[in-house]
Length: 86
Image (tube, rainbow, N blue to C red; front, side):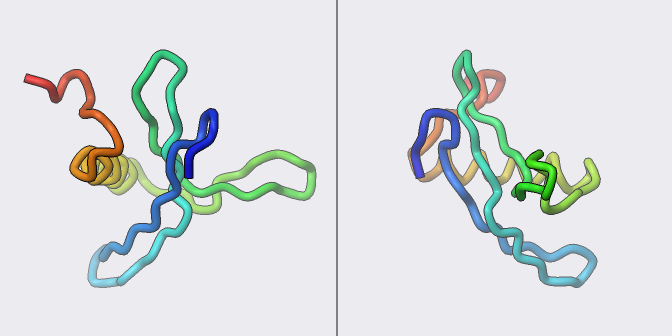
């Protein structure tokens, strides 16, 4: 997927404390000044606002975002974060 802001939709299979999970529709968005950011899947609520489809604790969310970005870099679809460049 490639639009003005939304760069990719990623499905992730993971295991947390022995429980297998699939998170479908993780969004990778372009940042206005370059780079990418990772966001949980969203849905449009009855009032028209966008809500996160899943709420993850920081202990899971941050490593998941780093893993998604690392995968995209490995596939040649994104560039590493500036602090990761030697």
